[in-house]
Length: 229
Ligand SMILES: *Cc1c(COP(=O)(O)O)cnc(C)c1O
Image 1 (cartoon, rainbow, N blue to C red):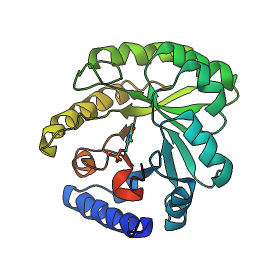
Image 2 (cartoon, rainbow, N blue to C red):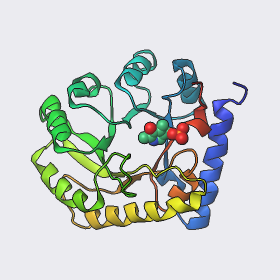
Image 3 (spheres, rainbow, N blue to C red):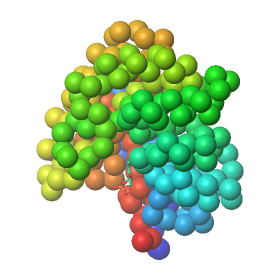
Image 4 (spheres, rainbow, N blue to C red):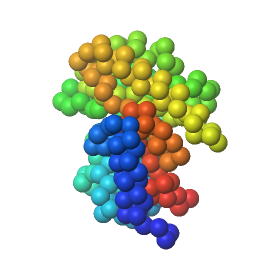
């Protein structure tokens, strides 16, 4: 692969800075999660050397393998759907869970953390309502978050969504706007277990729009570290 991660990272950071300036946001409020699921541990190391400090994986095996060799110099984000029976394998390795989508998962996380620690979680929302997408429907989000107060290890820092893939990126804008509105309406409640101040949205093809609409965590794979598969 000819283009270095450093080159991509510098370019993405510069772009983010210019978008933030244009829309009047502080660029420090946007965190770049390098999604390394398509690349080797060596390439993930290159990202760390380039200055990335958040890495995301969507499979338990991916996290285990990479974290074993790279350690905890970065924060690890679990961004894929997580089976309850696999929670015990990742719970000690991750600082953020982006895919909290059911109470049984919250229960398992809570059991594994034994009230000694909290885990920062995003509740995953299926804003578009597409059958193939995981996550809660918009109407289910508030009652779900209220129920989460029963699991003291869960700290709902925000909401996450995956926009459907479309040719014209502009079509994703209404989805990001809706997630932002929903996030604000929950933050307004002032729940102690759910400050809900963050928005995990935007990937390689649509992070520009997501940031314009308020994303605080963008999950970028292909455009940052490439795709070796
Ligand atoms: C793979 C993946 C990404 C990154 O996708 P790219 O298009 O390569 O940037 C982001 N979020 C989730 C949940 C993913 O599974």
